[in-house]
Length: 169
Image (tube, rainbow, N blue to C red; front, side, top):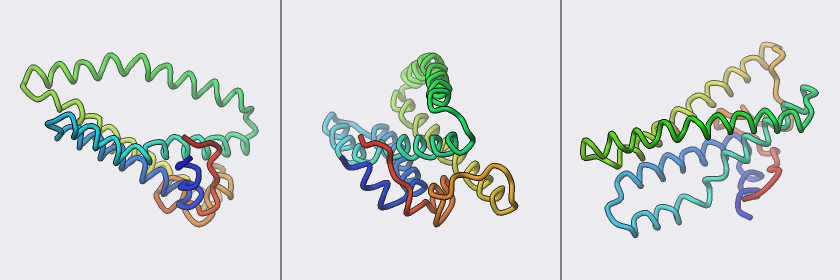
């Protein structure tokens, strides 16, 4: 409802960047929350744009896969496998961070760690987006579809005005 028009207006790169920053903001605000209403207020403020990174990444990934001749089912299977690995690793990492933070009297450390992970994700994707852009400028084979990158890099924050969201959240 909100995501598709935002992605179409801002472009994929900017949508991804804004969505990642909203995830960082939400985790930082959770970390500083001292009352129940703080958490509800944080969700109301940051949730409308939290889905932007997923939509932007899926759109760019799908466009690249189609251009490379990969079947949609093959791509979905690869993404599903990656999500499965994350679902196995996350319960091993996050509870231990929470337990350690609670042990030292700082249970909110979990949220600050999540914000740091979101910043790392944003930084990595920005670096990857810039390297893709450099490859395209030098005539490399790692080019993204032109409709995903018109007007700027796909993931570096300069975004496309013509990128279209394939779904909404």
